[in-house]
Length: 149
Image 1 (cartoon, rainbow, N blue to C red):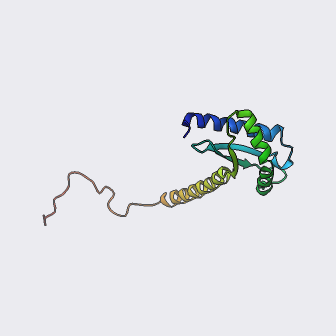
Image 2 (spheres, rainbow, N blue to C red; image 1 turned 90 degrees about the horizontal axis):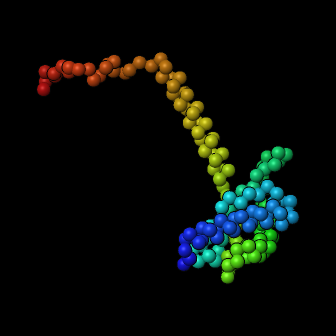
Image 3 (cartoon, rainbow, N blue to C red; image 1 turned 45 degrees about the vertical axis):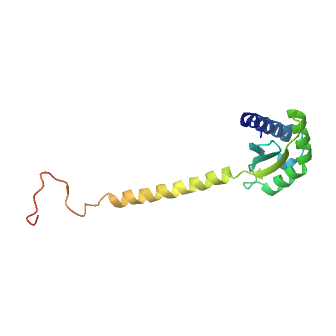
């Protein structure tokens, strides 16, 4: 089991190397809009999980996630060799690429917040002319004693 601080540093370095390699080394047009968001390493530094996000371009609103996944799988060997050269560790970790769902989750949360805001505005609109169901001040003091008590 490696030191957690060492694993974090190595994960950060792998993230930098992979992002730089996607920008400068790998010449696949499907990877132009891919951003590396995070890298997680196992405790024994044998496996690295690389999280990525694909952004849509201005012409195509929907990102090509399947094409980017295929391109990353085909470039996996080149990226692993570059990680090995850039880190200098004895055993170069295997790379597993997983699409990050942060943009979809953020969009879903924004939609939910918009629905909640609309519901709050509807409740406020209904409550503008509403009157209390009981007495105006149910907690008035001094209280009158009940004759039955």
